[in-house]
Image (cartoon, rainbow, N blue to C red; front, top):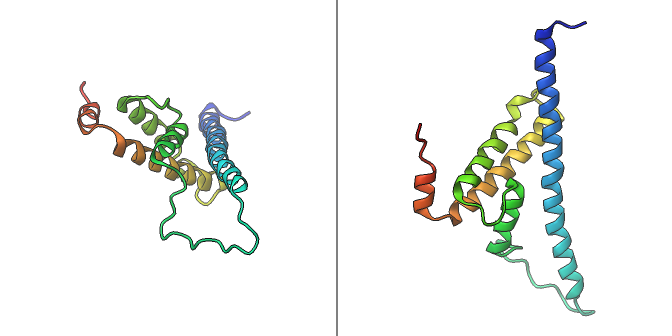
Length: 144
C-alpha cells in the first residue's frame, strides 16, 4: 500500500487530467459546431460549373462579432448575457486549471492543456474587448 503522501498528489493529477480531457472535448465540440455551420453554408451556395472561386481575403473572418461572442461564451461556459464579473471568474478558473505546468512536461495532457489555455485566453480577450470599460474597471477591483 502506498503512503498517504503519495496518493494525494496522484489523485490530484488524475482529477486534473480528467478535467482537462472533458474541457478539451467540450471546446473541440464548439469548434466542430462552427465548422459544421460553415460547411452547411457552402452547400447552400454552391459554385456553378466553370466558375472560379473568388480569391481568399487577406484576413478571413468566418463569423460575425455576435457569433464570436457566442463562441467565446461557449468556450468559457458562461451565458451570453453574463456580466464581466462572471466572465472573469470563469476565465480565471479555466486558465488556472488548464495550465500546462500542472502536467508532466511534453505529455499529451500538457499539450491539450496548452491548447485549451490559448482558447480560453482568446475567448476572454474577445469578451473583455466587448465589455463596457467602466464595468471592466470596477469588476476587476479586488476588495477584501
